[in-house]
Length: 387
Image (cartoon, rainbow, N blue to C red; front, side):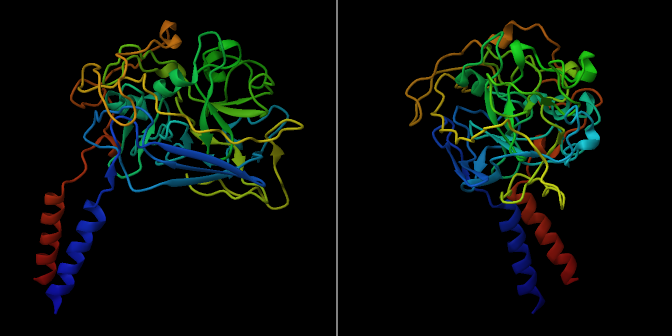
């Protein structure tokens, strides 16, 4: 009676590890996104497929298993705010330096990931996903991990910024939501300043246009939004070449390129779930308001398919394509950030997936095991147990 049990276990292993969802349409037509606000909670529901063309640069394919839901505070709170905001990383409510997976959602259907590369604690640029995996970011600035529902970005999503109207000399548009309910913006802040940490720029947090060491900016911007805190995806990216992988990635001067820590908490009355949800505000404390007086949250409308993205049919260029999303795609677009002569990726990995010097490949850049390999492993386990 041992063999039926072992066979069942082996088959279960195959189904658990080898089973995959459907593949996202490569023309962007699989995208869905919606937001609703009920009381103190913002609910975001989306299909984790990008609203633009995508190309698998690493061995992983953008698969999805259904819709996802993220619930965040509609009225976000700062747990440990002081007179100068949340300058110190000691004020974090979430340490993302070893946090993989979804920590927010972008308006194009991609997940927001921290700079964690799946192996190394993020202590600086050379332990970041950009450094280790930059050669697998597609022409829109994103890539996919081995598991379903994992098309994601570690740097600014260039196609989304183009769709939202990114302009040189202006504040970047909002590109998504962090799991603590605060907005996430592109690489430019007030007056079009390319955002960097105050540590890097030498500025004063809460006074100058710079972020804390996790990429968070504190200050009221009435011409931008009704929040007093927001996150930036730091580092302008040149993306007008439609190259796969994308070129001109940000370097050490703009680290971290996505947040390495969150500062919000989940207030009483709000529901926070999904996306590595933030902790509840401390007992007896409702947290400091993360929004201005008279603030009223609004739900974002879904974007359409972005037909001006680079519809790449191969590793080295763009081509026309057809599909239910777009009848024809342009051969490229010019983004204002291309005029910015900022640092680029240092030690760029060589073609073929070789990590940059000193970097180590992470699970998101590794080839997922094949069903054949899994079957062989399961059979070996069954034989060993039977013996």
